[in-house]
Amino acid sequence: MKLRIKFHPLLFQAALAAGGVALMPFNYLQYGLEHGKGLVTWQTMPWSSMTSGQYALYVPLIILMAAFTALHFGLTGYFLYRLARWLGEPGSFSGFIGVGQKNQNAGIFAIVASLAMTLNVFWAPLAFFVPWVSQHLQGWMPPSLLFFALLWVALLYLEVRALRTWFTPGVDRTQFNFIWLLDVFAFALVSLAGSGIVAISKHTTIQDIATLATMVTLGFGLVWLLYKLVYLISTHVKAGKLPDNPVLPAFFLVIPIACLFGLAGYRLVNYLQPHLTVYLPDSTALVVVSYGLAVVWGLVTLYLIRDYFLTYFRRSDFAPPQWGLV
Amino acid sequence: MYVFAFFASYRGISALNYVSILLAVVMYGFVMSKFLRAYRVVPQVAAA
Image 1 (cartoon, rainbow over the protein chains, first blue to last red):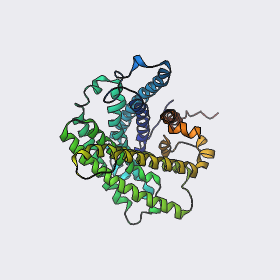
Image 2: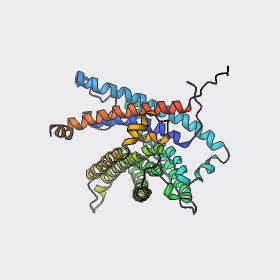
Image 3: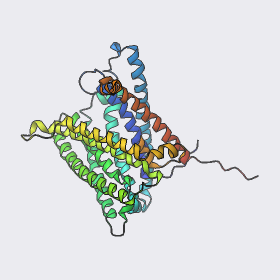
């Protein structure tokens, strides 16, 4: 099949979703199997003690993890190549980020979100298969911190540029929809990457830098999420109707955001609590509450947009928010 | 009641997680097939 793909930052959602799917089997193996200390790898899998039933369950997961890890890195490489060419076209970036109407420029944050996911795919599913990565994970922490710092700076820069357009007089914010949450999603994924460094690294300076930077993205991201949720829900209620069909799957963006903030908060509290005299919220409670909220939001959304799935989705054309379903 | 107890148990949560992974893979394939269809180049058939 011959393809002609015009570049758009939202293309990165395909790589982001592939990374998310690659992490799912990894997490299943990490928390569902006895494998000793640290992250589960091919070498620490309990191959000899596994029953045939366990083989039947886990081998397909490992195959899926390999396929989606390869897909994530393949798509990331291809889209980065296209991004570089796009940035080389005069006026392409400034023309894109300058359009605040209907939160069209929020798509730019899919790039940062996807690259933050790359860090997580690197430490976990890729390290599962590649001993060179898993055995030298501590050695990978300084370059990981550097990559995280680049993402952190890029995210704040893009946020400032986009904020100016969203609050410019003349921009009708009642037309905004849940795709507007893509920047919060990027904040959540960058927070996850930062908290991952805090959790994995054994170097205090690296941990402290990552903790401080993650507290900024986590704190701002949470406040920004609350503001946007209140605003979007109230404008949708006032409008008295749901947005157009292609935009509806964006409602699901709240689910990964809630889970990622919960997990990042869990890791930060676990690192900070032993150093503090004040008591922070229970780290496990953070995860349970955030995942609970995500489940409730998912069920309410399924009910709200049930007609979308029953009558529209199967035969519909592609729309970027559909990646939100994955 | 038994169904609820199953899904509240370790095995139940584990089974739900397993199914959700498979569901995510199917959904990815479905959305990717739409994505590829949206960007494919349709060969121009010469008018008769």
